[in-house]
Every structure is written in C-alpha cells, then in structure tokens.
Image (cartoon, rainbow, N blue to C red):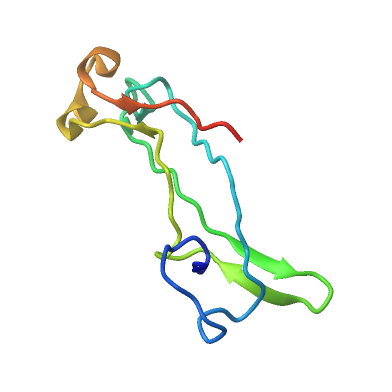
Length: 106
C-alpha cells in the first residue's frame, strides 16, 4: 500500500490533490560547533532555530501540488543541545551535549 507524502498513512485519491510525490532534501542550519548554540559569548547566545517550509508548484498550470506540514517525516541527524541548561554556559563547546549520526547515503 502506498503512503501520502511520506506520512506512512494509506492514501486514496481523496487524500491527495495532486501527483504522488517523494521528495528528499538535506537541510543545514548555521552552527558555531556541535554544541547546537549560536553567537558564542555574545548577549544573544542561544540555541539554533533551524526550520523548513516548502511549497511545491507545477509551473505550467501554476498549481500548488504539495506543501510541508506536520505529516512530513524528517530524519534528524544532529540534535543539540540535549541538555538545554547549557544555553547560558560560558563554555558551550564543553558543557553542551549532542547526538550526531552520519548522513544517510543517497
């Protein structure tokens, strides 16, 4: 059984308003290091805020065929900081913990 837009849920023509799509993207946000914090030592030192919003359009008729939403699945390969209290650390490279996996092939 096929799924709609990677949600893992069964689909029928009533579930999709356009062609069935499978999209892959690698998204990377700015980071100072593996701590997950930005702007070390500045007054605005904070946790990173990466995000992704997509709208896919068929150019010929100009119709939107897919938009990102909560049904999309993501594989997070770099999560940091795991210990959120390190956000105010004066040494986040040492104090912040992270979980980092290899990027999948393909």
